[in-house]
Image (cartoon, rainbow, N blue to C red):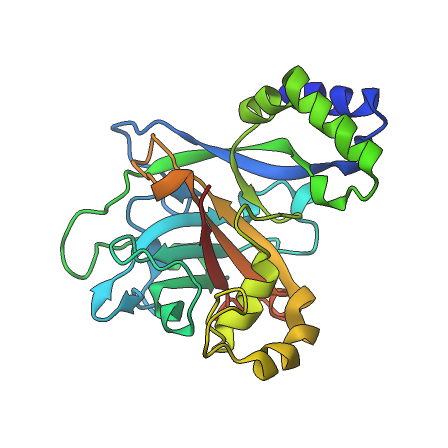
Length: 274
């Protein structure tokens, strides 16, 4: 009901154009029953085929954040952006907690893609024989609404949206909250397309105010900034025991060409908080 409530409020101010249907998901509380092999889940241990190694950072196994069975995703949201079948695995170093503002952080996460036979999957224990940091949770997918407020240009529309926030739009968005796959996205601490382009190419992020900031290289990279596409947002999740610092969220970004080619080797992660 919060989805329709958001759209109804936006329509009342003729702002329905900024209400974008998106794919969201929430976790299901952990049960004693094991999740089926190959199912989508947050946390736990991954279901990997023998040929894929567990990714590490400085010799430490990365933590599984998310396993997505792409066949379970509603196609009307992901269309041709993601393959119709296969698995995506999002790993991250929860101990080091890299923010993604420096090229040295690139080994602190890894996104793996497997599109082979489901029979080859096996529940994999961590190489260091420790228990997973996050509790395994099943997922439920649903239609959410992303309010693309940065697309508003005129002051009247901005004022109307602000008035809706005071009238209950914010609470409706809270009720509609969930982790998110694809669509548009704006950050609370800066342009994540720019951050992904600069940091992944070795330009340290400091808003250009650092004494050693490479302005020439940053300018050369400008053409590729808008080629980055939002892939995934993960927020804190009580069911899984995932708690980000500073009410923050972890965002994954991918270049358009890489997404079209199902190449997830160069995905970039950005952590932002309020």
